[in-house]
Amino acid sequence: MIVLAWFVLMTLIILFSFGFLGVTFWHWYKEGKAKRKAAATAAAASVQN
Image (cartoon, rainbow, N blue to C red; front, top):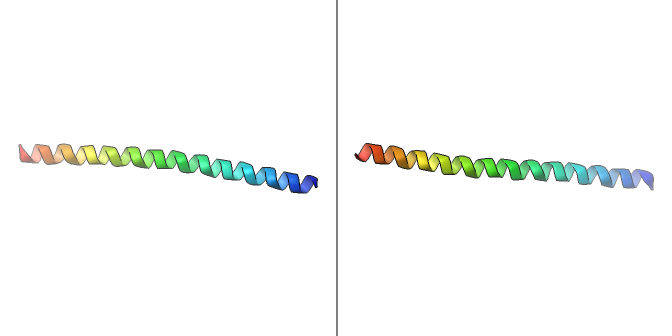
């Protein structure tokens, strides 16, 4: 029973860690995408002028 509880606890901790990492990377990815889009827009504007 204790082994089962330990296993469940470890699984939850691992899932939580991966979930947190996933959310963090997703946030970075979206932020980077927005920055790249802004940079591309600025570059296009400077080319037109």
